[in-house]
Image (tube, rainbow, N blue to C red):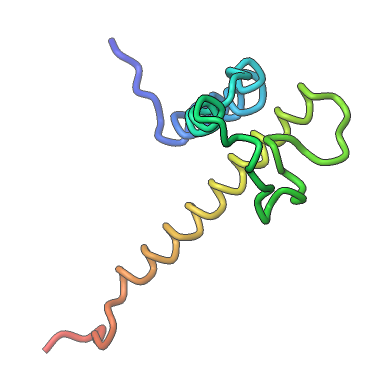
Length: 111
């Protein structure tokens, strides 16, 4: 006999795995520069790069400003990034669902 897993349990398990990857496994990601930085270094113009407008933001360089421990800083940045993404995606989903339920100009009575 197979046991059915509820939709809620699946969402919670997925969220926990996502937070684990963002908070713990992300620390072990490659420390090597990304492809653009690597190509700029090979071509000799990496030293001409300028900071982006977000360079002073609280989550710049995949870390949390003010947290001295690199592992904790990177993990927190990952978890915050996941949380912000989920809140934005969830809010957008709710807005679109609400809009789909009641089309513009539609009346609730049938003719």
